[in-house]
Image (cartoon, rainbow, N blue to C red; front, top):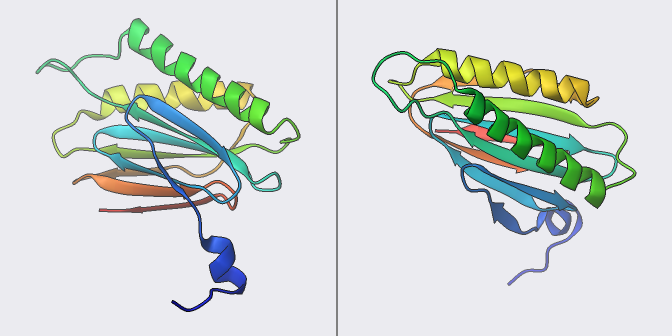
Length: 159
């Protein structure tokens, strides 16, 4: 097996899979991975401190008629986001320039309104927390795999 040098050595890392309705916080060269299917991913990072977190929220409408997201659902998701940011700040106390990218994947049958409501609340929460928002990525169709390298702020999705 050939020895790796330079960037190849640096890019070797551990992969951490993030389940729905969970978050993972990491520093260093970890690669956070999740599969989005009617879901929202919130990728938060500080590239200077090489730390970040991935929060995976499901957007599941449990009835066949259009419905708004319930207060309980929003409160639960915002609590997860708060815990995620708190854990990131505990892991990287020197992180002063947090940035976030929101990735939304809607199934072909999903209703957009619940997802829009959750995204709006997440964006307001992040802004209030002093996190700089980067352009969001919203797509409909088949599920997508998201790969996030917090050390560089790199987010990649593919179907």
